[in-house]
Length: 454
Image: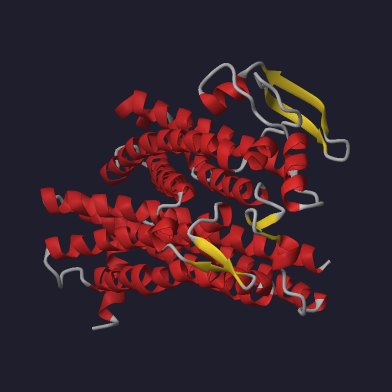
């Protein structure tokens, strides 16, 4: 029971936290682009755009910081075995993230907030670009830590603990070389669809609003590029995982038997107990094509991989939760294709898109699509690694704390969900409140808020 509750608790806090992260990573870059346009053109429209979207960015950023702090405590509370085993490695990139990236990010964000009309235009826009760089550097260091869990490198086992012996190997981990660009592109996709969704709400009321027309255009261009990059990098990452984590990819495809060529199960009903699919619709040779860019090529099945892992690591169940992994991949990929289609329509329609109220109404709901894709993408990454905490080195059973009573975990689980639920409601309320205001109202409010500090 302790294991189940601890896993639910970490999954809940991680999922809540990752609602905010991609928007922070992508929206800050878009805000920096807007202010750059203002500096280049001296057009007040871009200044109003910057302040409007900057306000929404700040709300989301604050929520992301608050929800992220709780996660770190769980390593010492529920997963003490993991912390003892890998703390010498896992702690290093997290320390760099806090001491370098986050301090840089928060310092220049403060200067940017209170620097309007105090700094020169060029100095002020440099601040928001530094925030953008630091935000994504922060994500990079966290992903470096996570990538060690996915693909351990640069370590030695000394007295039963993993200790770092090659820091550059940690930085150049093949997993992070795919994971970071994928997360960055996903963040830009989230920011772009957020721009288009909120802009669509205003454009339905007034299709000629120049601020939201420009915002929608920017979101459409960045969104189309970003979602194509997200899909493309994700494809390359999947091909790498066929070699590095074949069990995860076999689970993502509910692929039980080794085959060459291998067919792709488009949909399937997984029978985990009997290690088969009770129903499936397949596309011939497609899995080999996706894995090797060839219509032939052996793709190992879950049963063979289970036997190989038992031979290497000893008796145990090494097959991940297949149903969750399988459908997480399909939801993520399906939503990605839908976003690509919506962004392509915006690109093809160009300015006439503002006359299409039906499309604009669809886009007001489409701003939630990246959140769905991001969430299920992380579920695929983390559920697909089970039963490993650190792939090939430590299992979930070995990493969980042994002395935390079940009641304590249950109480904190309920507490975290309640607090996070309140924060989520507050975030949605604040974003909705400020998103409905005009840029002129936001600018007026900014002036009043700054005056309180002067």
